Image 1: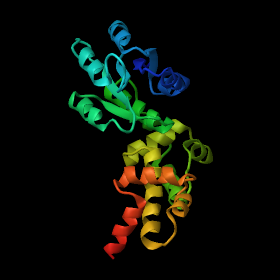
Image 2: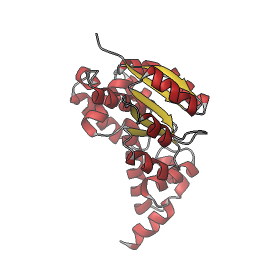
Image 3: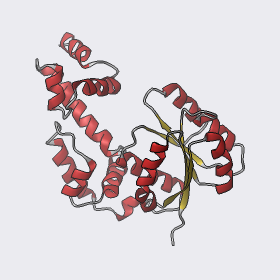
Image 4: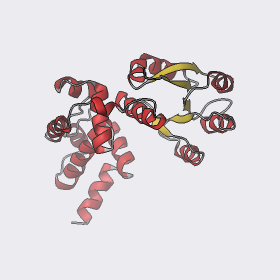
Length: 247
């Protein structure tokens, strides 16, 4: 019988904790159970010491102790759980401090199913308490088939559920295939396909940015601009200007 690893969740927003509870099936499939949770970081310190979880998911910015401070406090104990920080997009200076204090990884809110499954699989391998999910997966030929399908349709915002259903595999399997063979997540791969198409259209056509957004699977041009800037550290308009100057 496979041992079950314990995860404790700390977040000052109850809705975030509830979202993890709602997906507890993913935890179980990777060999984990949520042993406890708290919206109060100070209360969490005592419960973590009492429950002795293998992994702690912690919000970064919280009243009382922030995520890095919580990790520092717990790391003084003999039992040192792996820490995963759950962060908003604008917290990079704090994330850097987190990694300097030896955290395992971090997730950016909102956490997608695929990102969560990928993280849980890596945690399971790290703890050596569960067989990697990929050992039970379909062969890589299935991945080749999926990649061909996705690469032929880069302008569509493919969902994890839709692709898993189309190719008759479960979501955990799909995420594990991307993690094992491509060293990335499903959502990151889809995003790169869309960004590659955006770069091509920006540099080779006169289409408006809002039109390019639609061609890349974005219904909201403002959101497309934010994603493009986050990926390339430059706006779509500026990218187009620089691409044309270098021609």
